[in-house]
Image 1 (cartoon, helix red, strand yellow):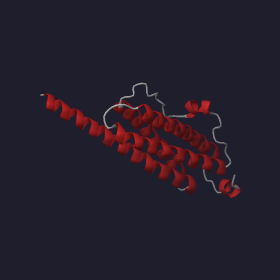
Image 2 (cartoon, helix red, strand yellow):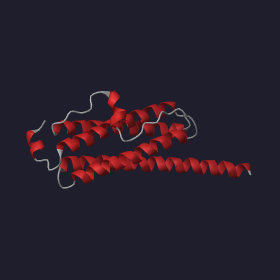
Image 3 (tube, helix red, strand yellow):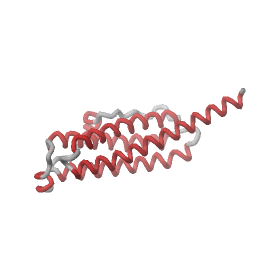
Length: 170
């Protein structure tokens, strides 16, 4: 813990640590959702999408590192037990029981939109009061926005592909 880091906080540290632990739980779940989804995914464009989903997984893991470090810097304890992840997370984890690429992407899209809201909330909570956490939240938010954009583009490509196949059948 950095004593000065705690001293300069102009937010409720307990509330911030609670928000960050929820974000941390969500990052671990997002990491696993991307990683396992990429591994079991089937269908068109799999060979193009799989490496990108694994990259997204790595980025989610990096977010977990950043959030963990910040929790510790401000005197908190990061969530220590994986059994707590589902309880703390405001974002749902969806098992990839249907491995079709479109289903995997839609599950990840829901997760990204939830993460976008999480980091928007943290950024707003810390704006002008905790510059370090605010900057971290903005940086993560920007990556989550990029993930959403990637997924939406793949889903659009799949839709175009399905429409082209329909036209060929007519």
